[in-house]
Length: 429
Ligand SMILES: [Zn+2]
Image 1 (cartoon, rainbow, N blue to C red):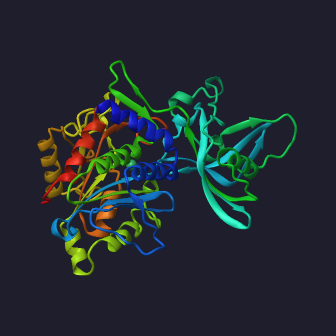
Image 2 (cartoon, rainbow, N blue to C red; image 1 turned 90 degrees about the vertical axis):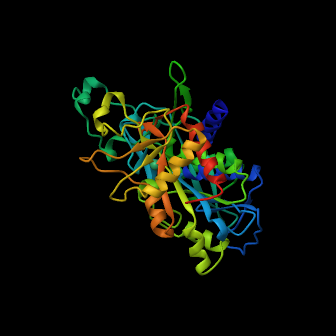
Image 3 (cartoon, rainbow, N blue to C red; image 1 turned 90 degrees about the horizontal axis):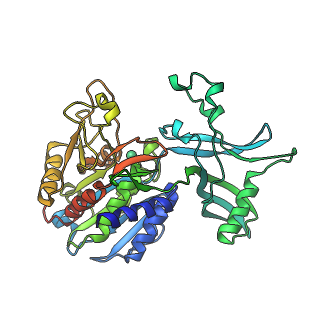
């Protein structure tokens, strides 16, 4: 079970280099399990026990397993996560030709840890919008091959490198894609036109625009002398998306279960498809009872917002409160912040703890040091839009927002087990 889940996650990460691809990966797995697409532009016809999903911007998704009875009876069980991760995005007019090298200008998306992006074998993926036969279409592309790199500067040319080296994102991050002998001009859109033909057999007249980001081609892997760890890009937060998906696919209860995975969390969630936008509420309004029954249903419901936590690092243990240092492979972490950076309260935390105890899943607590600022996630944002009770939880990881993060190889199974119990729970508090 544990090995199978970890391998499933490794495959999911590989297929999901961008939020667009993550959403497509979720769609593929949901459809294989009988979930049907609901088009936001059409009238919906849904029935009790039906399984559905909705996407927006190709990068956010809400999957719904309707219950046997009206959700007004027992509320709905929601699990939330996010599809995006910090990365380097290609600029609109990106071509750079310097010193005989062809490079692409990039913009930093989210709070990326930049140093690990150097000396990696990078590929490129995302969404391309183009014109074909007079019509505007979009298509996801993934170069898959290592087509670029950002080489470090040799330490001989920067003796201060190990004493703290500030990285100038404008000057130092453009990846190198090729070398040129002459002074030929390169056209990035022409490269994309070729890729559309090669990958999808599409003959675009012209590439109009794109949202493309670089990613590390090194696949996620189980590592460590005893296989204790799983290393990979985008564990924040595809780890939670995958755990939520597995729990939903296994959900066999009479209750209404929802999985929402939003884009744009890493940049504040404020977008049409982000958690600070209307997507989830608009979807639920079309599926749940109307009027005061809508509010009554939501007030009986609960959201488990799953996003990774910071495990206590042996080399930097003083970055944690001594009583709140979550350990890798010691189960999900309940995240608390009295300033509402996390939406957890004693009732929702207590319920999550109760679920873990019943499932014999270990559970931990995190609160940030009192002299440090606290991160946040979709939990408080979704809670303030829907007015739904929420608990913020997540698996402990190291190197959050690095191009290669680290989690415990035992923890995914823990999280899937407790989320499955949540979806199956007959009564919410
Ligand atoms: Zn996150």
